[in-house]
Amino acid sequence: MKADTSLVDLFLSLIKIDAVSGSEKPVADFICDYVRNLGFEAHVDDAHVLSGGNTGNVVVPVLGGGDFLLMAHMDTPRSTKGVNPLLLEDRITSDHTTILGVDDRGGISSILWALRYAVEHSMPLKPCTLLFTVCEETSLAGSCAFRPSPQITHGFVFDSHLSPGCFVSETCGAIAFKFGIKGKSSHAGVAPEKGINAIQLATEGLRHFPFGRISASATANIGIINGGTATNVVPDVVELEGEIRSDTQDEGEELMRRVITDFEKGAVEKGGSAECAWHWDFKPYRVSAGQEPYKRMVKLCGALNLKMEGVKSMGGSDANNMNAKGIPTINLGVGAENPHSTDEFILYEDLQTAAWMALKLMTEI
Image (tube, rainbow, N blue to C red; front, top):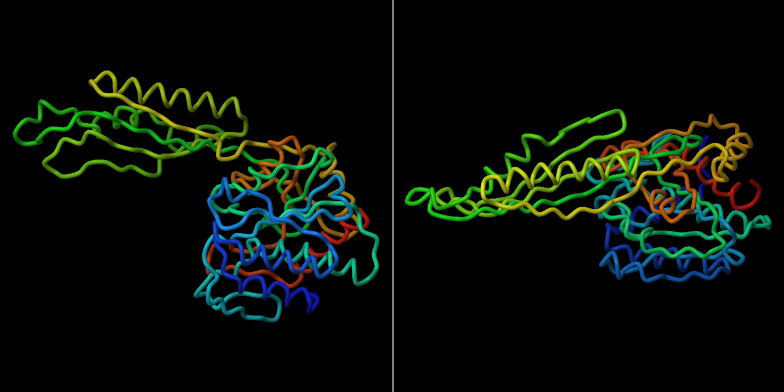
């Protein structure tokens, strides 16, 4: 199945706008102009204060905003500057010198096309809120800063690499942490006994760190280590950065406490110290079959003859922040194949199906 020409043209226009995290204003301007030309209001919130970027989220309250959200994010994980899209028989891909930008211009295209289609075909729209967020790829700052109206009860994010019909119904959460291990500097050749080697202190904590898969529901990793100034200086400071992922908030925080205890104990016993700063990058969620977005997804897949599957993801998205705000939200598959790579592509069929899904949610289901 080929996609509607206007949908393909919209997608191609969006991917040619270069807007990585923190630089989404050109996409925000495009969306605002697009919806205003259809007769809808749009405003930009103050998410830039948290994200540090050049624009906030774009919020489009359709017929007063309604009780549900349709969401996509405006940033791409890598630059699309100079993208050269190739329209092949069954798919759109880049020429492999840049990413294509399906993540998440495919989601934006689906929602905007559905809105235009409904207007042009005089289809009655359901009151709803369209939300286009910033910095999803780096910090989820846009969805974190978004302040939903009290009437919002559930949401749908158009951002998963899964095929349409599949959706992320649950994810782990991720704690980001950073340790500062402090020792004492001295000359490594003249007076090494006067120093306390921070690298050695760090190894005491590293010996006990639970690298890799801890259980079926938890993983841990340290991915960045920085320290030292010269080979003849006993290093006095080492910094380590990592993450802990868990299906539950309690388990994640308990693991974090154990790691902190191990690093502190190892450092103090040898005359140094360890300090840790940590926060939830995103919290875990699970949307069950009895909740509204899941029930609407069942009806939606039935109406479009799609094979439905709710899956668990070990990654995060804007859906995590919506669920953390008490708004049950699922992340729908839009068919972004090989996301974040120069081999990224989308099938015409998946692009069109995602757009039909947005239209059905806006008008019927």
